[in-house]
Image 1: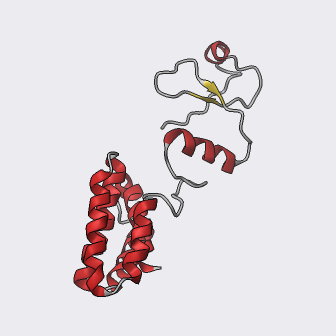
Image 2: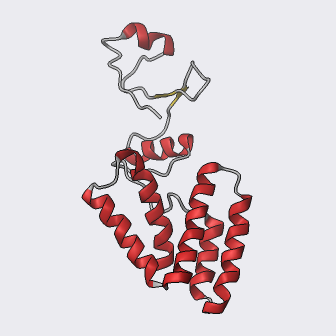
Image 3: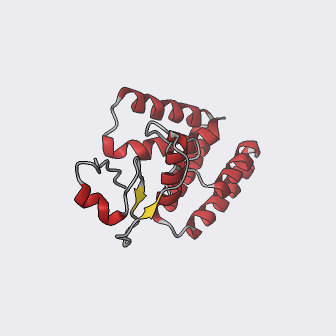
Length: 168
């Protein structure tokens, strides 16, 4: 998504065809809609961020970061709770349920994070429950130190949100 600012006083020839007569005016141009839609929401940052999230399917917060639910999948979060509470001998069965749920996910991005739920469970089965806390700390440390490439930061934030469900 691109968010652009235009000085409509200076570029009247651009603003006029879109009916911009008062300032500030916010217009949303979804793909395929060259006429645009008027934004009529609140003028606080939180209002605008909420509008952008709704229109683009993102889970951003003011300032550009991600909210605590970004990357998470509700149905898999419920299975995480069962996994955490289960006896060691029952966890493999819950992992199988997660794998079945992930197989049903049609959306590529959801499937990607569904696979991370699977991976976290597998590693917890192999390495123990401390894996989740250690992995969460590692991901946050990498994000805080800036050692994650800019194009991978959103993925790391979302992975951190997923693995946090296992360590809380």
